[in-house]
Image (cartoon, rainbow, N blue to C red):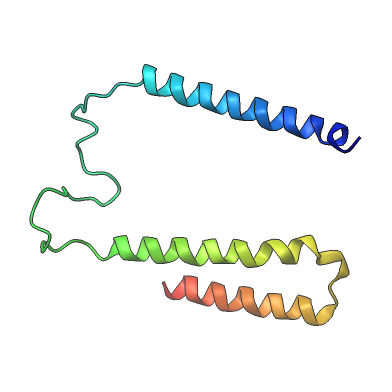
Length: 110
């Protein structure tokens, strides 16, 4: 009786494990392994990684990273607020508005 209630979960877990293994093995067998010219080019950082590491580069890369962190944190704080919006009183609403105001000031300063 105890195992019958968990049979569907066991079937689901085993099917997902088998399917993920099939996808992993197929992608390993089908993919190209040789590096081409496009793979060896600079990616996201804007300069070649094979040069001297003491070269100067633009500060805007740091600013983009900071903006990403600001908006990533904003989403992580906004999600619980949106989920519980119907049960929040006015103090919770005003505190979130103050948080969004401070976040907007930081974005404008950036």
